[in-house]
Image (cartoon, rainbow, N blue to C red):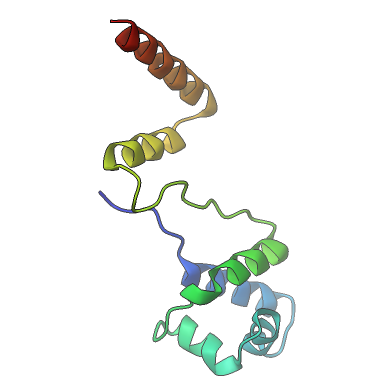
Length: 116
């Protein structure tokens, strides 16, 4: 089953595009200052020669601050049972009304299986 992940490089590319569209002469310099790293590090992240994992929280926060877009974080970890992860993934793809109906059905199932 594929794991839900956040593409930090994609977020960095969106941050770069935001700075560029706002007229910043050297977007990587602005990004480096905002994230507390040097410009070479930003370049390596954007070129995918180094992973920005240690800076994930800062990248997500800067992305949200600049674009206003919220990043949906995975609600499960590798330690969560595979069946539970799958149910969560399925529910996240459903419209709100379907999620509520699905949760009600799961609760009804639980009540009948416990009572049996």
